[in-house]
Amino acid sequence: MSKTTSPSEIEHHSLKFDTDKVEDIESQRCTHHHHHNKAPGEVVPTRPPPVDGSIIGILSFGAACIVISFYNCRPGGLTNGDAVIALCLTLATITQFTGGIFEMVRGSTYTGTVFLFYSMFWLSYGFILLPGVGVGASYADQPDMLGTALGIYFTMFTFLTFLFMIVGIRKTITLFVVLSSLDLTFLLLALTNFTGNLALGRAAGIVGLVPGLAAVYMGIGGLLALEPNPIIVFPQGRMRV
Image (cartoon, rainbow, N blue to C red; front, side):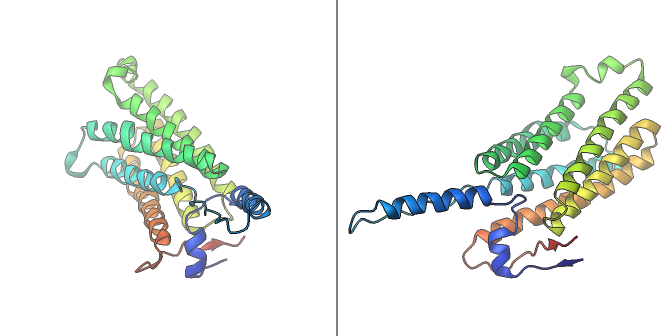
């Protein structure tokens, strides 16, 4: 079903979710233009590589997933989620939004769309949890209605994450693991809110560690791939469907 790429392929393609056709075409066009108009003896400056915003985006996504999943596991009877709110509104939102903008600018539409979409998920989820916004307080007398509303909220993200997974199914195995396990996490969170079953919530926390750890693996693999002589490579694998 799959095969592992060689280190040379990983160096160039380990983290990119989207194809680089736009970059390649533009690079070739600029190179041809410079060589065609170059004066004798003129040194043509080399263009620096475009900034890869996917690395900071996927690392912050992984870190946020790990933290919030530990919170959902309720270790030691943890119930105060203020640290999770701070993470949602800072690291998870700002860095993924920034990474998404960089990816859009460099022509990686799929990657940019995914990061911008999930940055807004973290922002909206942070607003739901933040007491000062008043979302939770508006359901103070109707807790069952709050559960239904959050169940619908997580169902929508379950559906869209599934679509992202289908679109990216021929990219890398690691990306497939991230999106498929994230989709299952959203589904468990939706069921938790619909039913009020805390055991399902803890299960969502355990499953949610998988996309978090896989995303960190992708991010570190991308950083290693940028090194001229990395001490180790993290194969991402190629889906063959």
